[in-house]
Length: 406
Image (cartoon, rainbow, N blue to C red):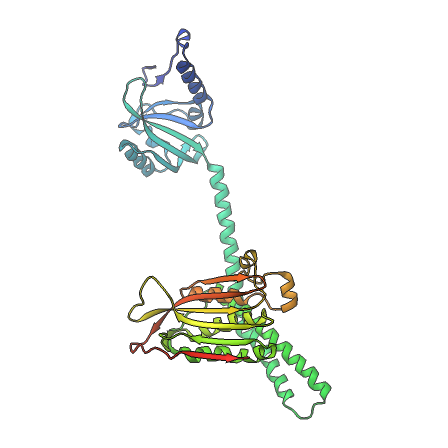
């Protein structure tokens, strides 16, 4: 190897020196360097001057301003801070891999860079080897995908915001239908046939109202309209109010409904009782829906957490277990998706919107917890979650509470 008067490095090989395998391997390496599409250049480690580059680099970056050799490395970059950072790291002996915009004859383009120290075979000095792979097209594709993702999220947020804003307008007429049909049913002037028809209309309106409420709750959560309310409440009252509307359903199906609050769980807690009750009603109602015989059990205890409860906060564990139809592992992976149930035949047989568990998962998430599921087809399912709640200073444990309905 030798240097030209303008400081460029030229590699020369004499034909009679290529007798050994090592020499042939070196020649093949040099040929590969000359023909690769990767831009390869060698720079002085301390000066930043260009010492050598392959044809791909020459075609991409054009002629370098030889009058200022100290700026040759930095002038490659669209942003000067990138060159200074890379040079410092290589001077410390590190290999630097990062993406950066380089100035090319076609304008700034993104490149994946690999810069590392190496020994100059001519002088024995330590120099910097730079490999640059053009990734501008990849970056453009990533930017397009990101823009599409942001547009989709904006559209979804707009939809959720619209539904959340329409909450009052949608519920008001349905409440009117429910109220009027209930008044008519209280009349003594109806024939049996009229009462049956009005009763069917009333039940249909109640079912539609349930669907509307589920849709609006999901929309509010997605639009960020739900804020947890931190108020003092009775856990016993919250559980009782959750079970009350479901007793008729469990009695009608002959399902045993058990509720147990373990010793050591305080009754007076601080949190959003309304949302906790909504979670319980959805989980217990879901368990009753998919259980034909046996029982549904609700158990509330203090979580067996690695971190001790603080002076003003504890973690509560709630588990709802049933002896229902159960689910496969694949079905468990789908049940928290909106409008999805474990199987299409389940929707036809049991009905529902497939939103109940979506609401549960998102409300539990807002309360700082996560829902876990264990299930076996034909045996039953168990849904559990842990949430953090405040508790009052007196810290008196609630008595063991057991409730049972059949």
